[in-house]
Length: 183
Image (cartoon, rainbow, N blue to C red; front, side):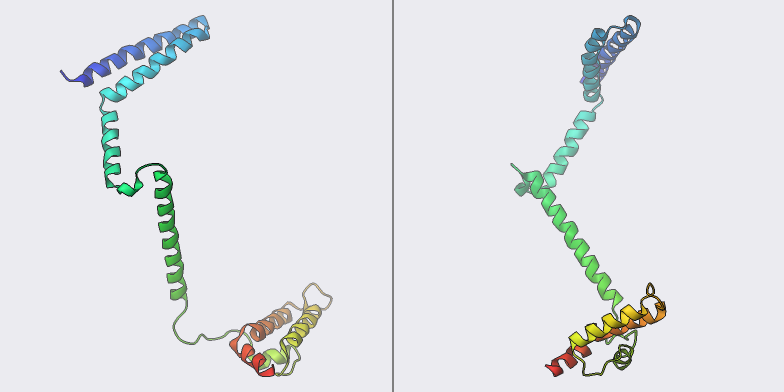
């Protein structure tokens, strides 16, 4: 005879006993009876879990999962090593995806520049083309104070043009080469 039906039958008996004790608790309002019912309820659950085969199925799944892991993942701290390896793999995948996004955003070859040309940028900031980096910064600060939208008589469009001009003169390769000429 299979043990499954016997265990499920015993689980039903203990569940019935736990239910009767639970009802008795409600009628008598005695918490001690509920304390007696709890172990019977737990025992009925364990017997049912074993009798239906769910416990054996869980053990098989766990054994199959453990069989796929390397022997390196056995022993003390195995969970931490496994988690670190998974985290490292996710991080590498994110970095690879970022690199691919950057590559796809930038078409090969020279990029068309936006904003004013270098000559126009010098004119916007009222500078000569041979001005030093410090002079560019000082001129930018003076101009921003004049044209800032929050200042009296300020203009948002002129403010944007001054910012674009400053970015052109400080970020471009041409500025670095002209700065190298002046030194």
